Amino acid sequence: MAERAADVRYHHGTGRRKCAVARVRLYPGTGVVTVNGKTSREYFGGRDLHQTTLMLPLRLTGNAERFDVSVRVVGGGVSGQVGAVRHGISRALLRFDEELRPVLKRAKLLTRDARVKERKKVGLKRARKAPQYTKR
Image 1 (cartoon, rainbow, N blue to C red):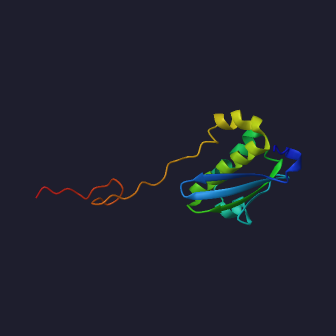
Image 2 (image 1 turned 135 degrees about the vertical axis):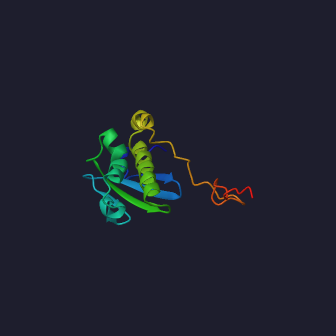
Image 3 (image 1 turned 60 degrees about the vertical axis):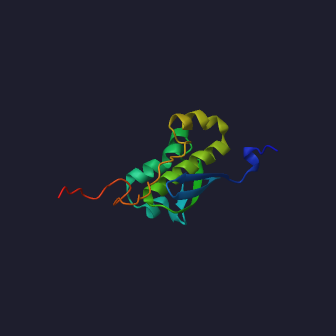
């Protein structure tokens, strides 16, 4: 059963990056971004890089002023959470309009970034760093 855009109250998407998971909802509105009950600037701090990364899918598709974004994000650190929110917004935009796919795909916003921290190995100090070698 296909649902039309006019019948839906919001469009949703799930984004993931590292250990962070973001559940994103796009409501018709004026461009306000709320993350875990706070504004995105309050939640992620004042770094403009995070704000730019966050709004990239909306700006590329020309929908920055068209939707209010509501996000629940858990896990990971600041950078991972920002990436998860960006991925979630991209997926939610696809639910809104499938014709946005080429634009988002070209910017590599639909691909889940699979890079995660490598596990520590036995006998090493970290994932790859070996203890200092001494000859005598």
